[in-house]
Amino acid sequence: MNDDMTIRAATEADIAGIETLLAPFVTERQLLERTDKQLSHLAENGFVAVCGERIVGFAAIEVYSRKLAEIQALGVSMEFQGQGIGQALVERCVERAKELKVVELMAITASESVFRSCGFDFALPDQKRAVFLKFE
Image 1 (spheres, rainbow, N blue to C red):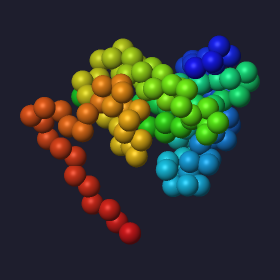
Image 2 (image 1 turned 135 degrees about the vertical axis):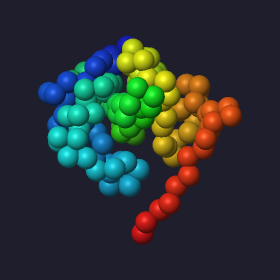
Image 3 (image 1 turned 90 degrees about the horizontal axis):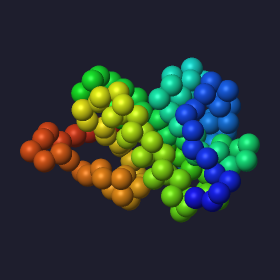
């Protein structure tokens, strides 16, 4: 990451910038579209990467229970990818999950290398595996 980059907790004032950041990923069907209300909820346990005044990265955790949370809406602006921003956002999410005493943290992603570099794996040893059914 460059020296002008900071990663901080997301705030309500960041919602418009987060929406702008995530829009291309939604268009490309890499991320789900979310309402302002949903983004506001995610921002409660979310983090932004900021360069100058511009939000260039976002990730958040959705806490389902004390046992399970999920990293959601990880996105980094195309021109800032490959600089470790995604990994730094994931690491902040991991720290937040630990603060909340969540037992397991998962991510559903098409960019597995970022998560694997942060210690994620495809399954927990001797644990159940996720299976999916897609509706067209």
